Length: 451
Image 1 (cartoon, rainbow, N blue to C red):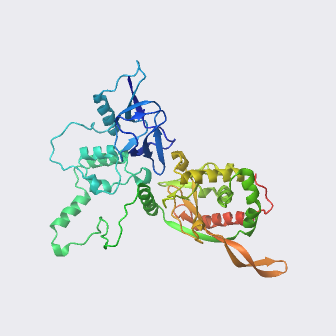
Image 2: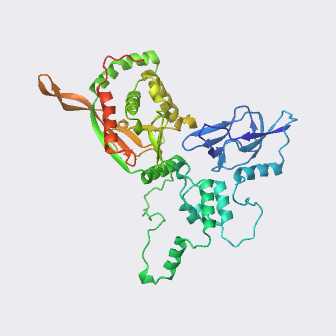
Image 3: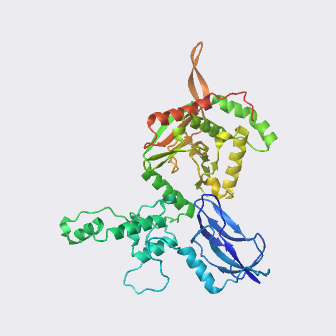
């Protein structure tokens, strides 16, 4: 008999951790090769972890809802294959593995002790906070005596504004360096306590505003993805001053062309051609014309992206949205874009996307027209600086200029709306970019071949 250490697998180049959703196998269960042992989730993608060996599950080292670093031992499997070079995993080693995963050696502060300590200091109640904290951050906070309220006020630099260990350690060092001074917050708090009641000024409450609920109302708890989306949208609004520019485009030639080729294309390629790959192509061309729309912001630095990776917002059956990314979209022809769009959209709806397929986008496209909306003002997908919404295509009377004078004709019209970060994208760049996208769509060659 040998004991196999199951590691949390690497799920993508930019994915460092995952949350355990649930265990599909319990201790004592027999496991076959490639059986799913547990389900995990990164920022937006859910994945299954298969077993690379056959045997019996001996121990789960983490519980559901815990966050685990990639490469950490998450379970012990007993196999029938004898191993002379793999030492047996004892109970003590199991505990050591879990402690090592939760608390690593951190330069600059004393190692966190796992022995019970006699202290009169109250332990933080993390359930009182709606913000997510990793086990390592919680341990550091407990060791350093940092309250949950104090943690909530520390700005995080991680994904979705998450507080990382580096953020907390920097705060701890700063706090220790100024230990001789009473913080302004404490001074204000003490002054508020000692101030006469009639002189006290009401402060904005940090707690959520109480909501009236009647007997017929239904209370629905947000699912994990909806919480992530909510946090990401609020963070984006706090980060970027949003401005939106609108353009109306005449896409009659584009609609007529698609109607002409869609049946032949479906017979030839065994899949449908939608407007989305056409929009992606136009966006990629416009980004090449205006590369400063393909940037991100780091403090006072503007990072100009070399790759053009276009995310496309896709609606899931649950009602949530996910943004798979077409990497190097400018290097694909229309046929390649069509296949990429269809593949990503289908796997997104089936929850089969890989974590890397939602990472490293440089620009986002969202089709509000698929919901019957004519226009929208989308929220920027951080850390990008712009997002384009395309509205529904509607038949409308429009004035056409001809050599014989102006005429009114029925045309296929649509609105494009670009939301952009006014810190780095001004009205001239934002307006010119969305106008250029419209130009590429309006000047569509009705005799174009798909290649």
